Length: 219
Length: 226
Image (cartoon, rainbow over all chains, first blue to last red):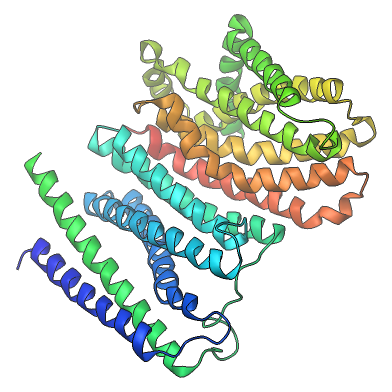
């Protein structure tokens, strides 16, 4: 089985499972008492944010590996991961305001995590724009690796600086020192969704990587 | 180490000499700064918002734009007649080259910021005499980290298409932490608060400088090595 076929399979399975998560979230998971139906978006929003963060983390990591060993495969992986991360960022940045309008009463606010994710999105865009603006492959790989590493280092700084500034975001619910304060049904749905989004990330990146691979060979 | 610094100084001196002899870039940057300040004056309603409330933003947005203008110039000159190749062939380490460029950029931006600060106090009637020393310190802290990243990126963007547009697109996200910190500290200073109230911000600015100057020094060779 070629890499592209494998990517298609993983993506297909992940999309089927995603439909399953939707059904579970809408039909078999109880409604949250204060937020009502609006809370359901959380099963898409939080996992999408996770996948976007994962993408950026792996872009940074493969950028470091590329500069260390100069293997073009790392560069191709970083490019694939950045593109997929951009898509997940868009999901995160569209589902967030839809929820925010209902619960906070505003589409957008300059809260710490919102600002962080917005800049995550800008970093992805900048990364892809830079890749598009350099024609020579070797140069492109080195430049984008430098930007990828800088971007990864920048994110904690942005988080810290806007966190010191102000925050309005819901406090952590699952990943916090004490036990998750979520009813078991909701927690299971959320964890399933995290799993599916991770699988979706793997599927998309595999597909994208395979396409990049083919393009490189044809060239 | 001493050799690295000496070489860095030679590179910086070359850039500054070039700048001093032509004076086109620095004069344009100063005029640009003055114009941005003037535009700010007409872009606000002085009866609605007190100058003091808006002052930190005006100062820092102006400085950011002016710095960006200076950065674009840093490696542009090296493109003519393949001057960059000559520089790379010279027996100076890549680190010296980076630090030299960084020093020259800092000097360039410092001149623009000095004029900017003078015009700012003049145009907006904001007295800064009593807080001049801490204010200059904050300006230096915030500018250093930002210019460190900017110098690194400007070495990359000169060989891309749309270089003038690419630099701000890549660089502006990196401006956020220094900008937020600098605006907060400047606001406190202008309000007559002691520096001890903004210790967290100062540490953040310092950490940003240390991290990004080091990171850029490590990464710079990857941007110029053939």
